Image 1 (tube, one colour):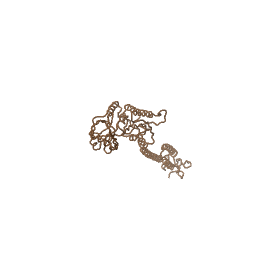
Image 2 (cartoon, rainbow, N blue to C red; image 1 turned 120 degrees about the vertical axis):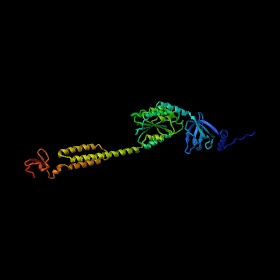
Image 3 (tube, helix red, strand yellow; image 1 turned 135 degrees about the vertical axis):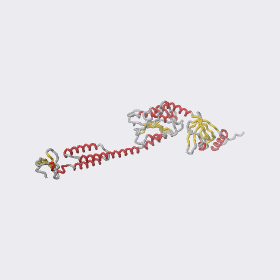
Image 4 (cartoon, rainbow, N blue to C red; image 1 turned 135 degrees about the horizontal axis):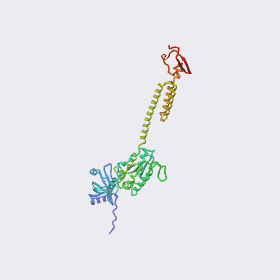
Length: 411
C-alpha cells in the first residue's frame, strides 16, 4: 500500500481550518470564570482574559456588545460569558469573541481583598483622623518603587520639573511577584530611619531628612498589584513617622495600601505632583512678601520723617532741644538700620535731607545775621516792649557771646 505524504498547510489556511473546526464543534459556547486584565480601548472594544485556578483564555468583546453591559466589569469579577470560540488568525491565538456577559459573583482575589479590608478597617488602620497633612516644603522626598518601573521615570520627571532643588531618596523594591511585599516593607523601614534628624542608612549620617514618602507603581491586573494588598505591609505603612502618598496603578485601581496611606493619588505622576508645589509658585510668594515689606518700610520712613519735622517745629531753647533732637535722630537712625532690603539706601538719603532741614532751623544761624536774643535775668524770653520797664536789667545773646544791658526806657 503506497504511503501518502502529509498535507503541507499554509499558515493562514491552517488557522482558518482550525477556526472552522472550533466553530463546528463548540459554538455557541458559554463559560464561567474570573476576569483578569480587563481594559476598554478608545474604540469601545473590551479586551481581557477569563481564568480559573489552572487555565485562562483570551477574550474580546466588541463595542456593540460592550455597550449593552449592565455593569462595569472589573478584575476579579466572576462572570458568565456567551460567545463564539475561534482563532485570531493574525496571531494564531485561541480567542473567545464575547457576545454577552453577566455577573455571577466575585472572584477569589476580590473576596480576599474584601475580607482583609474589613479586618484592617476594624483595627482602625483607615481612620481619617490619623491621616496627616503633607509637608508644604519637604526637606527630602523618599520614593519606593522598582528601578525598572516606568513609574520611577514618571515620578522623577515630575519632581525634577517642579522642585529640582529638593533631594530625592530612592529605596528600590520589587513591586510585583511573591517577594515584592517583603521588599516593599524593607524599603519603607529603611526610609523611616532617614526621617529622623542626624541619622542615615547604615553608618551614613549626612543623608537628607525625609519628610514624605511616595509608594508608587504603574497599572496592571489585580494579580500584578496584589503585593500592595499585603496585610503586613499595611501594618508597616501605619507605623510610618511621616506621611505616605500611595500612587499605585491607574485611577480605577484600588489596593489596601491606598486605604492605609495618608493620601491616595490616582497615578504615580499625580503622587509626585501632590508633594511638589512648583518652584515658580514659591518665588511668586516671595516676590509678594518682598513688595509688602518694601511698602511697610517706606511707610515707616515717611512717618519717621514727619515726626522729625514736627519735633523740629516744636523746638524751644536751641541748645538743649537741639541736643535732644540729635539724640532722637541717632536713635531713629539705629532703628532704621534693621531694614536691609533694597530701599535702605533711599531711606538714608531721606534721613540726610531731614538732618539738613533740621540744621537750617538752628537759631544760631539767625544770630549770625546781626540779630540778638533778649531775655530777663531769670531766663524768660523778651519778645515785646511791654514786658520791660526803665532800669530793668536784661541779657542779650549774640552770635559770639552775650551782653548784660539796662533798659533806659521802652519805645
